[in-house]
Amino acid sequence: MENEPNKLLKEFAPQLEQTSIQGYAWIIFLLAVIGLGLFAFITQVTHGHEVTGMRDNVVWGVYIVNFIFFMGISYAGALISGTLHLFKTAWRKPIIRMAEFITIISLLIGPCFILLCIGRLDRLYYLVIFGRIQSPITWDVIAISTDIFGCLIFLYLALLRDLATLRDYEILQLPKWRKKLYKIMALGYTGTEEQQKRLNRATNIMAAMVISIAIIVYSVLAWIFSVTLQPGWHSTIFGPYFVIAAVFSGSAVLIVCMWVFRKIYHLEEYITKKHFVSVGLIMLVLAAFFGYFTFSDYLTKWYGSEKNDELLIQLLFKEFYWPFIISNYVGVLLPLLVVGIAKFRTITNITLTAVVVIVALWLNRYLIVVPTLESPYLPIQDSRPEWLNYTATWVEWSLTAAGVAVFCLLFTLASKFITVVPVAGLTGETKPEEALV
Image (tube, rainbow, N blue to C red; front, side):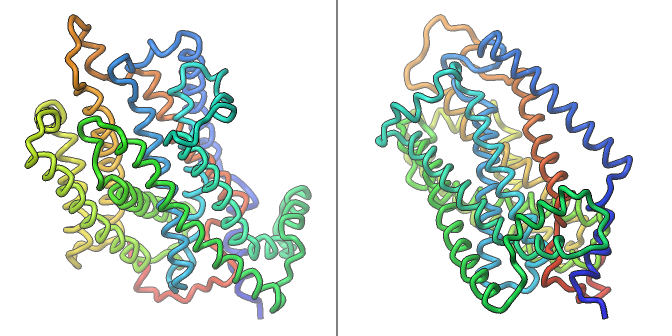
């Protein structure tokens, strides 16, 4: 009788062996968006930051918002995949690789947006030569580098069994270089009892490490804001607030990825309604925590009646009314209603809710960065209005779209190299009634 990994690989063979016309069209579209982003980047380097909306007052804009957002979903992927692995949650197997991919790809994209804020990229190496350990920016560089290294090891260990399966499965019509690459990357793994024991021990250790690193790294990112004396940023709650927001947005991104790959590769038998509800419940709990932290943060600012905090809150309700409502009300209440009420728990509803949460959490980052910078302590006399108020230009939006396109492209290419769900140890034992649309 054919063993389960070989049976599953036969089902996933078209994903690995060939690319459809729609697949090529998708890749060409993503490359076109990335090309527009490269043109915008060249324009920015050539003409300077005057082609962006950033000025002397608002020195950070959409780039920093994107940096915080991508780093957040990367840490969320690490926390979700690491936690599910350590607790050996049975339903984790079909979706855990997607969480691992989210982690690595987001970690590669997020720091690039920091580079877009630097006016002199030729002086980037100064950060290594002259960086001071007293600076929170230096802490962030060290933390992110450590996180990338740790998550790459964790992902590699998680892929090892499937790499060996792909190496040994002869029916797949793959180029010789790919078969050779699978053989090299499998490191001679044959699945002996001793090898499995060592691999399980190493994966458990790395899972615990990536969870710890993720919490530390995103806390460091929060401290970059909270150690300043700017209104809206100087808050002791920012560390846990950023961590909760990161996992909240990451769970939503994971749900969207599950829906997309379920549709593309017809994984209804393996990614079922149970998985959407389970991750949806995680999103519900995180929505409640996020709502609580948001309320606590704004309550203490409002009740304290400190002049600059009060001006900031007034600005949020006047100039940023709809983004504030979407990020702090709609994005929090919708998961509680859709996932919390059983009759609303369909795959479609949970996915749409996840999309709203992603938008809400991006807007939340925007509200953290821009309004504060538009509320300086000292009034600026005879200044141009466009220097006081920030509006992103086509250059910033093009580079933002390029970042999203790179995320989608790397995810697409990764799914062509190895199956998006683990085939080693996965069985199609879900009940048919669970695979509801």
